[in-house]
Image 1 (cartoon, rainbow, N blue to C red):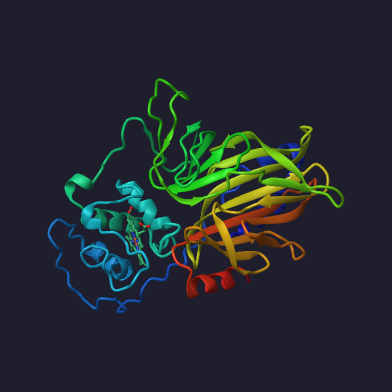
Image 2: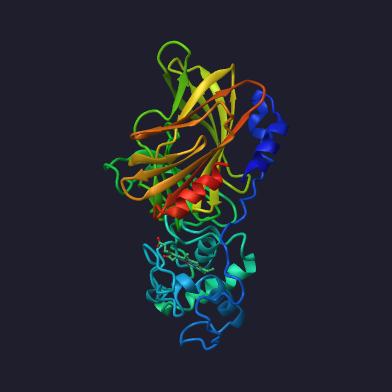
Length: 400
Ligand code: HEC
């Protein structure tokens, strides 16, 4: 789905030291949305009522769009009781409980990119930007006045149309042992944010919603950052993510060392080196973090360009936190059951001899990297609200 990026990357063929710069120009458009709008006349309610209940915007175009795309799950009155039976129903807009941000801008992003781990689809491809804005206002119109937040707090960092990167102490992540790490927080304009351990660039969690509260502008780095988004995926905390595999002998853990974070493109970007125990650089990686979208719903992707100093077999641990069991595997994609929920994982850019390996509690990809030409790999994760036939169908579709 994101192969245009791969093509552009491999054509660029940058030399080793210029890797980062050559990739600056890459702008990977998010894949088209797969959300299927109802056909005109297929309106779940079959109602042509134009009467707007009190307290909600009477904008006729917005109501039309809502009735076409949203009403089946969110209900006529925004109470979350639509005709589609959801495993975890959408909450009521009328209570103003927008847990992914209640500003207009936050709602526009939620509507465009969906909510990973829920049945809220991404409408980026199905609706125009202007239609999403109309719908955000319409949805806000359901909420009581007091629940609408027009502006962020003074110490809150807001991500607008460019990525934002912050470093600092991070509080423990829900579901993990209490632990503070040297943190790195990357805010994507889509409303996703990525929480990483700055010491080894391990991805700890992915959040959706508002970005971060710095607590105190005067005392930079002193107070812990307070990420504001809700965790939609939590990733591994233990062990090394990167390993060098040898034909003979033990696999050797590599340490990722940050060279630079970049905010020049549409998505946050990391440039790092993979170093062995002696501190020698084995490979250089440029990684872009952003949204992903599949039939299974909304997700996120790590897109990497990896170039080695000499031919080397590497493996990358891609197991999410709480990986319990493999449900179904294809060569380059798998459905996993997690302690809570499930996940569809799709790896792109592996060749026919390489595959995604998954066992109890572990999942990894192994591949060969070479000098001279950065190799492109993408790991897409789709946290799932339910593990149903649709999830299996998405696996088949994505692994074609
Ligand atoms: C297939 C069902 C479905 C459809 C269709 C759908 N939604 Fe949702 N939506 C959900 C679910 C489920 C949630 C709750 C996700 C959660 O809280 O984990 C949600 C959440 C939301 C939220 C976030 C609320 C919050 O807590 O911040 C907004 C805003 C939203 N939907 C707007 C829309 C709009 C606008 C449309 C139509 C363009 C739409 N939705 C269509 C299922 C759907």
